Image (tube, rainbow, N blue to C red; front, top):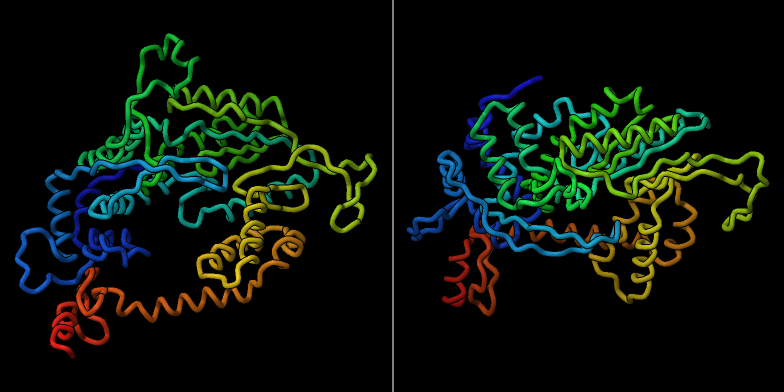
Length: 453
């Protein structure tokens, strides 16, 4: 096993921290709390002791990390609706100064460690390992069976982030990272929002003598960029056990994991049931988590050659009757001969199209939302649905022009977006003091306004 040392010294380098400030500020530089930190130089005549420009903030955070005095702020949790799965989730929004920056400092050092030896089909919140790369791999595996019978085990982890055992993750961190200061910083971030909980809130576990009167420090917050990387580190060993140690015992041909959703392919149904039992026991004893009750083992969809063909409702043509079940995974529905989209995604796209059709004037937000949905149709076999339910209601070409015009307008205003926002000749709010192309700072703008120029 490869181990890593002297990580904290690399993290403390001024150029690394500066880069993390910019990484954390990406796509939100116009927010007042971000703009205040990113100022290039201190305001003239301002002698306040607290940091007033980016370089001073870098020095302040560097000192804080070096002396190990950094403590995360208290948060107020909020609820959001995740429309892709119809769930209400509790998230935490980290502050930019300096919480988000510290998260990026950790990820900058942790990312190559997690990626080293990570299972090649572990996907989700990893660069170049999104749902589209997973879709291509699943389609390749399905075609590889060449119409032969096979089964699928589909399972996900119950309350994955909420039940992550912090002590288990810390143990795995210490196993590969021989730098106590870096591990302590990771523990500070993880433990701040964690709470002591009984094992998985499960009555059977609580009544079990092994787990009776036992509590774990659990919970990785949704909303932290660090959470998915700690989760990937925690599931690293499980992924390899499924495809290596348990391959013969569980009858696994292929396996893929997207965040906390696990899918395994195999030709033997009983062995896949056995794999599920082995996974459950391992996760219970080693990770203190549980597979959700709605796990499934089913035969994949196949055409029934003996049954009479059925009529396609849209085209009116005959098509073979199918048996078995399609695989619903990562927002896609994988059939034996095509890949479509989950019904909830199709319904949401249809509603957007109908809502846009009712408006006299389409704004930039609606246009960009509709175009974002079109990305799903580009990568799937849903041309017929698009022709029937999307194209009659929206003009994609016009929506693209609307978004393009808005983007060009944003670029044009980019030079002056860091100047004070003035109202009736007086500075109403200062976001940045960086000079625009006119060469006037916010102070000079106020002075010229007062002088009547």
